[in-house]
Image (cartoon, rainbow, N blue to C red; front, side):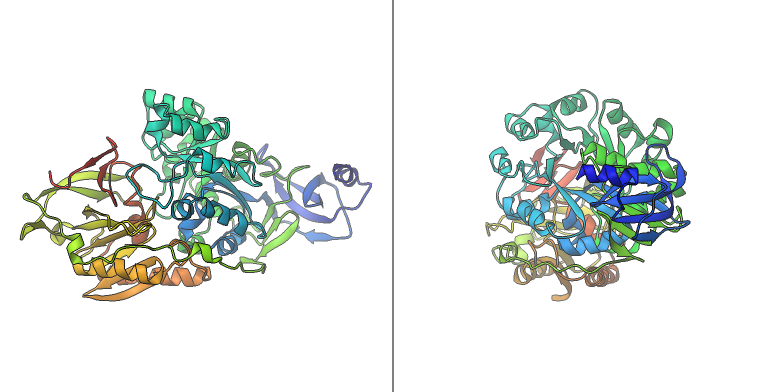
Length: 567
């Protein structure tokens, strides 16, 4: 094959396709120059003065490498794998590195296999990092914990490229044998990190154990300390968590080395309304980052970090994944090529077959029916611990508040924006319920719930009314998972997510409309935060500071201890 590439590059044989007249952005120099692109066997083989029988006229347009998302979770879009591809390909993302730990928490190894199988025949390049923490910690109950032996069965499979975010940073820094065995699977060479706020000697120990990247930095100081120590920093811009503007000085002040873009968790609405990696490039340029640097963070750098050699540039030997832009301001591609073939034009993906949903990934909600009594919180004092939301961040604060005490139970205090928060185990019908309080939603009546609850994905429910909380939970068991809102003893809105209780097989526009309708219902019930279901989904994540509630109770992540509700 390379013999032919060299022949085409010399001009001795015709190219399969020539993209002519385009203004090529070099990610190696930051320059823009006019050249024709010769493509053979899905690869760029020549950049310069080329012609051929098949020509795509890009005269005056800008040619940029296809964008690579350094770290994301397809499940967070609530879309099936093929529909996720249809949503992001027209925005210019041609490759994603995914961590399917949401599906793995619900389905075990089968969940990882599902992503690999589902992405076999779509035009989006999907690379998988193996979930390192299923469950995220011992304070969450998942379907089937995955140890090193289980993960080893997938090592060496095509498109499996490393170990995903090592969230159990205390164990990694402590040299825990089980954690080290997982990192041994990649020779401690390609391990993504996840260490929010970690610093000093603990950070050094964590890096020494294996992880070489982090997408959890929220401040410049944190990102700079980690990059000084050799870590690759993934600047994250998700639906809820927005760190790009705060972290841009890391690039403007210290260059593009060891830095890249990642979306992590983007809902379908964000994908359709704002875009994907292209929206990060657009925002970075609008905030003063040179175009060449912004594009490099979205292309060459993530490809190099993940050792996806042959992706991330328009140069001989690289895959012909490239974008055609009318300008370098809006970053809305007119055409998207993957492997030298057009896969999207004018904001729409070209048709490809919809995938069948296998029976093994549905019907995953198994609970004991609950009643209002399951959400009563007996107490002798009204002084309780409270999980406090922080706008636009996945981290929370652990607070203390005085709430009303009635008939030996503490109850919601809507005057101070404090309502109940509970998590119901949903994998084995154990009847286990953990409960506490949360401040920051603005909810004044009713309840809402979801089977999307990172990372173990038990049912998480927030409410003023115990009856409505029970109604939400029982309804989710009936529908096979999803999102639901109840008020005054009736379900007022719902969105089924039949695939593992996490994803829908419906078109993206329908999913977006369903979520928007639920958010409208919640706004009428007092909720003031944007993307309330996204906030809800992280309240059970027991590895993100400071305070969480899981099916096992109230967790202080700062000390990694279960703590009582009552102070």
